[in-house]
Image 1: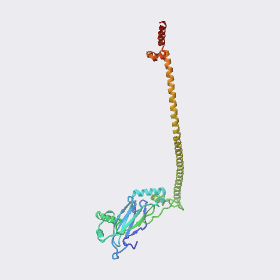
Image 2: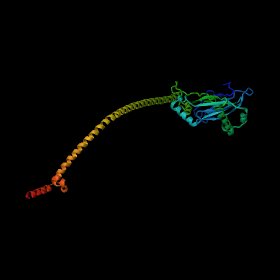
Image 3: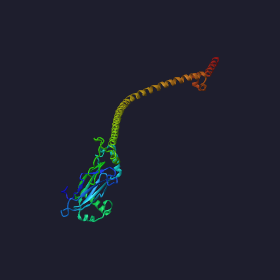
Image 4: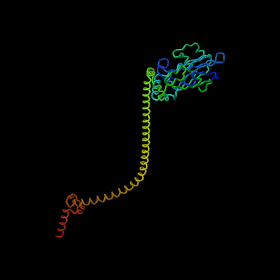
Amino acid sequence: MADLPYALSISPDSALQFNLTPDADNGDGASRCIMTLTHPRKDGKGGGYLAFKVKTTQPRRYLVRPNQGIVAPGSSETVSILLVDKDRQQLRATYNRLGQSALDHSKDKFLVQSCAVPDDFAAQFKNESRGEGGQYKKELVDALTSMWNKATSGGSEISVFNKKLHVKHSVGGSAGSGGTPAASASSPSSSGGGLPATFDSGKRNNADKMSPDQLQDEVSSLRRKYDELVAFSVNLTAERDILNNTLEQTKRDLNRESATRTALEKQGLKVGSRSASTRSGEAGGYSLKTLLLFVAMTFVFSVKGTNTGALKVLKGVPVLGDFLEFPCCSKHKKKKLGDRDEL
C-alpha cells in the first residue's frame, strides 16, 4: 500500500470494534468507533491531495461522519462511526441470550476508498469551514459525489484504492478510540468463580461490595440458570426431531396413498368401460321385456274391461265391437240370426 500514490493509510487496518456496554464510550451510552485516514506522503515528495469515501453494508445501522472528503499531503482525517442505539440494543439482547459467540460472526463490513484528485479540484476544499459532523457544504458534497461516480464508473481511468474492514461487536471493557478489541468478560464456565459475562454494569459495581460468599452464590445461581437453559434447549431439540420424524412419516403415508389412488383410478377406467358395455346390453334386454309385459297387461285389462262393460264406449265401432264381443252386440247378433231363420 505504501507504494501506491493514491492509497491512504487506515487505522485500524483490519477490523472496527464496537462496544455494546452502555455508558462505555464518552459516557453517553453510544457505541462509537474512530477511524483515522492518513496521507502517507509529504509535500514536495510527489504526493498530491487524496479523496476518500467510506461505505458500509449496513447504512441504516451506522452513521459515518464524514463519509467522504479530501486529505492534504502529510495530514490526516478522523472519521467517527456511530452504531445506532436501536441496533445496539438488539445486539446486546442477542448477546444476553446466546453469548459472545452469537456476535463473533457479524457480516457487517466497511469499505474505504481513496484516489488522487487534481490540485484545482482540491483547491475548492482548502480553508473551507465544515458544519456539524465534519461535513462540507452542499455544493462541495455534490462535487465529491459526482467525482466518485466518475471514478468508480466502468470506463474511468482514475485509479481507486479499496480497503475492506470487518466489524466486531463486544460487551464489556472499552473499544478505545482506535477500535482496539475490548477486554472480554468471564464466562460462566470460567474457573475460580469469576464474574460471568451476563453481569451488567450495575452488578459489576455492586460486585465490589459483595463478600466472597455472596459472589459465589451469585455465580452458582447463574450457573443453575445456565444449566436450565441448556436443558430447555435440549428438550426443544428433541421435540424438533420428533416433529421432523412425524412430518416425514406423514409425507410417506401421503405418497403411498396417492400412489394407491392413482393405481385404483387406472384400474377403474378399464373395469368401467367393460361395465358400461354390459349395462348397455342389459338395458336393451330390459326394454324388450318391458314391451312384452306392457302388451300382455294391455291385453288382460282390455279383456277384463270388456267383460265388465267398462269398454262399452267401443261397442259402436263396427268391427272392433264385434271383435271384442260386447254382450249387447252378441244379443243383437243372435236376434238377427233368429229373424233370418223365421224367414
